Length: 454
Image (cartoon, rainbow, N blue to C red; front, side, top):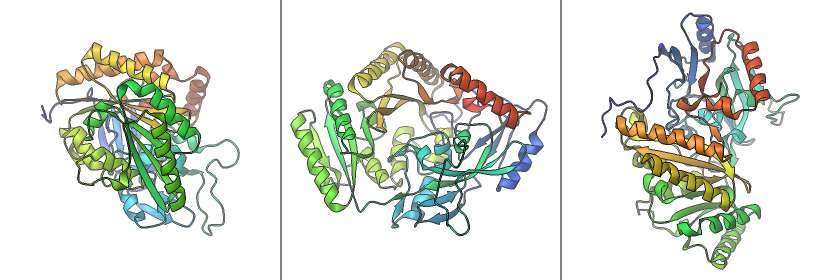
């Protein structure tokens, strides 16, 4: 079931791959592709490790892949003011290693350490501390006509200006997230203060207590008992990622001064005990580290800006390492909606996933990423063997999930390559019309391909 010749996506007929090493080369490539007959455009890829959403595959046929992985420099790090300038090929493991032992850390994701810092942020991914768009301070962009610009904030030589990502007037930086209006060749990324102390806590509850447990966790979040993103893994996801089985697992982070963290940990333990909802409340600093529970190790390390354990979870999910995941790894699909942070919404969403399982034979897993006291990023994963029949089942399951969740008002905030048409369905007409006008203004020859969001 691991035949490398089995494609897990509909095959696109590409034109070729180019691998520039500088912004100047990117500009020359875009100019050379302008107006070429039979060419659907240029598709920019940072490292191509967008697993579950299409990896480096294009949405359209006849597309040139602009592979930016060779542009992997970390141009500058400013610990004092909390930022780094990185290129698209720079990975979160690469930047995290530079920051190890310093007073700053990166807001990392639970994905592979070999994934792009900028690529994930530009696709509006979610880290362990907050949404990755909150990490973007400034962008260096090559426009379709080859012009190089900078939007947001960029450091002056004398460092006298304090950062201001929104700038003056209409904010331009967000235009280049989930965008085909230009090619990002570098970005200024915010670095978080490394807390004096961090304590990650693991709680467990039974499935039948789901709604009450979620509402209780929301109360904690709303009252300042949680730092960063609160995570809940269901039993399917826990088993898929190499964690322990049997119950829903909650991971929450407490950070700050030693006294603050100790006080909050005691409060959380008392609240959990008084609620009667949780079967376990554990401070992970007291857990044996060689227990084979990769989910726990990954989450604990990633909260502290260290993605070095992430590869263990990747191997558990895909059966191989990052470099061979597309060629030899097991199947993976993702569906990523925002939903309300309350027990009723979570129960409704999981009931829809059970319906998908009954209808298609593919059992989805789900991970809750609570971004604040109101909004959850629900990561729905479909894991399946590397087999054409199973891939077809997974496609049907993903189709059905889009349909059921949209009908319930749970809209996707990131799309995969086979569901780019949902951009038209979910974006308001007026906003979609404005984006088309901007595209016509900046890229009248369609040099940059449509992609997943156009």
